[in-house]
Image (cartoon, rainbow, N blue to C red):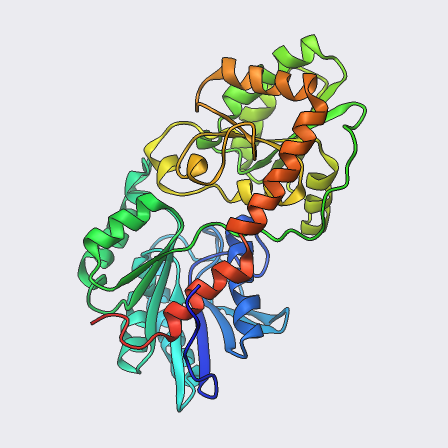
Length: 400
């Protein structure tokens, strides 16, 4: 990897800016925290500024601020009024954000804004930060132009993001990191500045010394339960496997709307399927480690192929056997029956075959899991990957 020639006697000041979950959240939040941890290790000053977090509520809630792992964060709004009231509150949020950006700028330092996705709400703070001399860097993990929006509000949000991308991509943005080769190709075509590929990251805390499966054998799915995650395929596939191998159990953990959880619950017919919901972070990782076979069953959609599933890294890091659908860059990093079991998306027969293979070839699959953990340490090392982003931030003349 290229050595960093930046003189670290120059202070680096980084502000994470946007509308996202922090300090608590799922995989996307953990990606941000991995960046933050590395930046702090390099001696950078780091703060987090969130303009809006949460869903529409009947009244404004107070601003939230605090410290998380040595980093100060401030959330300007956790709820916006419905109707005309929100129109008048947006300028207040923008004004507060610009004031904080001015206050947080450090003289004689390299000042950087790190943001995530194109959002009309953060346009003014971006422009203001640019006029103050901040470098603007984006980390892109999805292509939301491929999303099917069902409400007028979602369509307006999408269109505002498209407009901001069109107007400012080559005007105020200095560099872009992307999570997949699809996004790398897209932004190399559209963006005149520097684009770097920064895949998922996951920490391998310790080698998995598991010598055999649990009794019963535990399959586990973790995620958002959205339509792209293929639960409608996974649940009946497990029921077929469970009918042949009764000594098996499927755990489902993650976050979803109440409506979606009811839909998933209605599909569960076997008492061997347990819907655990969202687990606290420490319990979540413990549950991953204690399971035997981890399932990533995304559907074959343009949206799924544009990004890269975070959970694959977290799965591989455990050293457990992973069954993954071949979407996005899966086959670029992993080889079937070497690092993981890879199946075609939407192919229920292959999913059943892979689950059966795990049950009939325990020793081999334990070795596949250990090899997957080694592959994770090689490709998805958080420090190695965060350095790619840090080098992009401190590099001179990123955008000619």
